[in-house]
Length: 524
Image 1 (spheres, rainbow, N blue to C red):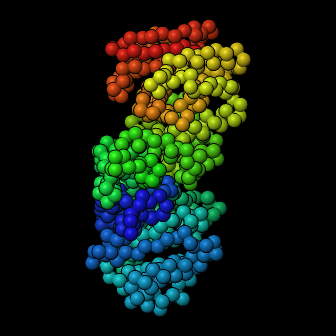
Image 2 (cartoon, rainbow, N blue to C red):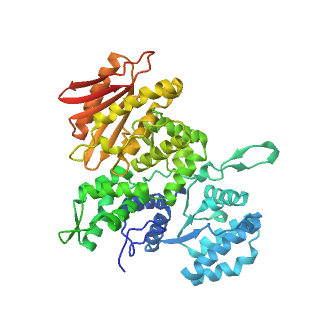
Image 3 (cartoon, rainbow, N blue to C red):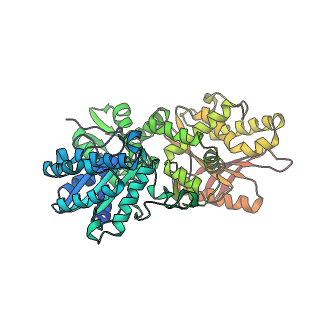
């Protein structure tokens, strides 16, 4: 069977090109070997199910272990109607697993099936099952989110917790390790352990160890997949530079890496001189094509932002206003955004997870503002901004933006202009580069009043800094920072848009020569 890049369901080594899973599997196995209970909680399409299956496969090769792999997605509401019903369902799931994995153990379960009608009886059943198996029994449960809202499931976790705490006692002999997988961190789920009227809550899973395994793939782990693909398909590519560019745009998000590779392989690359070859330009085109697609991952991202107004506003502050927001894992809003895969912690604080998401959200927010008539009219035909060699004349772009702002300044609310000028610039820029390029906010910026935009247009790159006017001293610091960024990108020319919120803005432009760089600046 010919392999392919997989973006739907579980990845299988014999069917799909897969990134190097050895680090993820190894670190999770170490936790299991230590007898830890933990939750693999990550956003959807992050490789949780694939990791569980790989763990099951590895443990299945070890004589001292017995692995049990269950999936709670198919458990219906009726199974959660009472503790007894759920206990019976758990036994049924175990029986179904061993019916095909080990008939002798299945017979033991079948003989006691009908006697499990409560959580206490389920606890005793688990002890007897572990004694019969007489190995280190590891329980892996996927899709626990399907049951997490039901009290019966929380009480089941309470049973596992009690047995874990007293596992040195014969009557509480239990699983060596339990691994749950889902979007939500089960440790945060709480229920009333005492009388309901007392209103005292506690987590039924506070025994769980922190799962600190990085689920994103690094550049070298992406390269591992590309090496196999290139060998099997006879494709030439610079493996190091291609894998690092894929990481640059995706931050190692499993779905996005595979999806981008799939787009490049199936829609972009063609034979050149009889040879299949991937280039950095192919990656850029793949990014453009992917950002124009509609898929469940992108739809879910936008839906989660749109359905939570406070979350939308926090994303807006980071992306559009360029604010530096300190990361705090205990803040419910940040925890929610991280759970949805929107945020990550970076050196500068709270950041959008990857550049593809940044661009997607940019596009959504600018389109949303334009649809609401919030930003006014300001679209200009893109041809007038293009030079003879096909590159953008960014000086002309900024002059047109300055003129647009000057016209809008007299016609629209000054407070709106002051509040939304960054979004206005992004909305103005979008139709000019649409179809031939894209723009990314540079996430490493450290000063709160700045926003750096890296525009990619065909094979050219342009670095534009947006900032508020804060006096000559701040302006000098800004030039130094912009110069350093130009060095990072290997550029000798940069652009600066300064929003001057003084009562009488100058509306001037200036060419600034600074440390061998040419910086074109406009005041708006």
